[in-house]
Image (cartoon, rainbow, N blue to C red):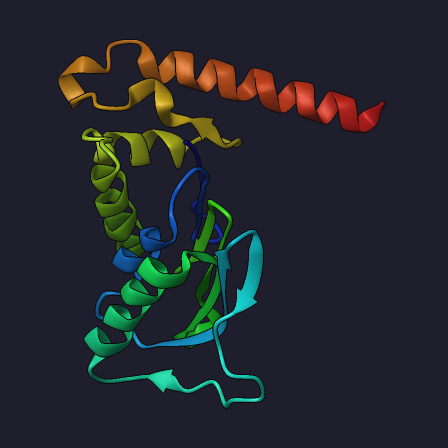
Length: 174
């Protein structure tokens, strides 16, 4: 898993997650599903009705969240775009998740829940560290670790993240 945080823009992104990684970001928040695709039998399929008005979920959020969980069980959600109030939102596509929440505290809280769900038990420390970096970080270095186990893992994680980013950008310039 790779993770990036842009604190100035209140953006979070990560890779190697499943569609249900969106659930912590939906909790207690009004939302509108703009796009929803499932992937079954090697085919991407639109799971929304064509020309259907995209409604806002402003009450009984659990109904739509339960529906999404069932949809993922049946059709394996491959892509979803969700709008939140104030121009915030999230985008999940084939294992890549990007989230914008104007409330940085809420963004951090939801991200920490997500990280802990995936076995990143030093989630608060990981957030604090990654949010101070200029590149996405390979957080798989700290999978399963408690804060007391981190030792120099964060430094090694940062060094690899910077090395890979520099290699990537140097190839773009070639």
